[in-house]
Image 1 (cartoon, one colour):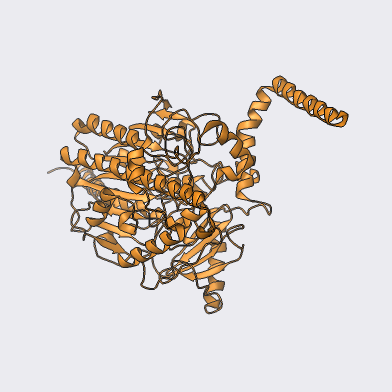
Image 2 (cartoon, one colour):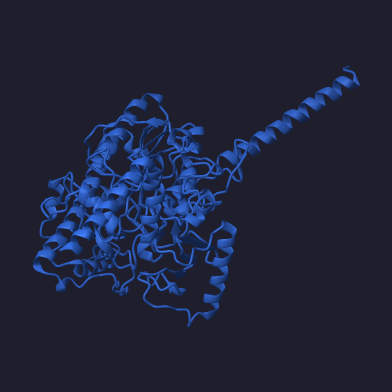
Length: 608
């Protein structure tokens, strides 16, 4: 007979083993979330295709005349989201797409280009990712995915913010807000001292000439080929520059649209509105406003009409070219046998770009020294084209406002999710959804639990979104609860969403600085202000916004804030002032020379 101490030792061992099994079971349940039975237990490949500055109806499957057969095919075998919201500018959207955390909590409370100097460096306003967030790439990489990114990055180029430190095995990225699409060393405006390119964490040696959409897909395919032998699922993130300014595309794509836009932007806005209703993306009879920034097409001269129409042809060609190169990636995945196990997520970072750098004196001077803009040059290497506010309104049809503003045209963008095994095909999701919902969706597909308030022993901001998987699998029609308030703020443009209602305030000159209440499910064009009919909801949602702003550390904008002026100020602070400081003697000599020239000219005039 074993003695009592021996028995006690064995009991202790058995109890320890049992506790260990229970702990392991609990840990496994935390790592592997419940997955709908119809979803494959094989972890899928994931591809994010991020377009830049595409309006709500810029995709054929959303009502566009632009030729996007590859994106349309993805929509056909998946889901289109008719009520999906990003932010109204590039880097805040990208920061949320990567982290699932509100941009004020992840560090990108505003863009470097548009942030007021009073906010620079304040908590939440670094204009780059802070170190209190973990990216979806890191989570996927740590769980056994191979991870790649190619394209525009725009969430920070500090060493700790480059992709190799943010969860990507291999990367080739353009670090800032944009650059030329034909020449790798050419800036699109004087917002930085040069174009910053990085490959795997170090400054990249780039070819002189390329075409951005083709190059990013080439790199993605190269990474996929090189990593296939690892026999692991992959995550590939492609950040296109299409259709960010300068709008550029190969001539063969542009010429496909010759004559397409001769009737002007108002006719196009109406045609897109009608098509989106026909496709089931919008309610029948959806009203829309005429934007006050839209010029009367009929008041233009015939020469002006031809020039403006060519601008839209270039824009369509750029989107068409991007879709063509997406098709090359799809073909590669089919040929490599990976397509059927690949989930695709396509979206735009914000609505269509309406700004005109030529309307700013400093911008015009710089552009005229660096780019051509004749009608026969538009789209080509060395030429600069924009969309402008009138065409941007058509690209956002039938929504109000465009990039930068919190109207639906600025933040409601196309989203397509495709390739999940067992999901109903060709579905249209009408429920309100948000860019913070994408990371939880990808984690659930990859069978990874969201990390909560800490990861690898470090405190982090928790993700706030909701997985879209139940809706995608047909288990629910409502992603967010009707009483869940979801806030938004960027550069003083503010909104709060609750159920089908949206409370919104846009700053001047496009907005009026006042709060308005809309039912965006039935009135996505924001035409009927309900604040008087729904006074209680109006008051309650203003209180909801105040809670959101306080919880997320939103700062009040300076009284004199105006976005165009701020871009000029920030350009001087970030680009010109460092040059002046570093070259004080030469700067003083130039200023002295200008003063001497001014005195000489005045004396000559007086003498005459």
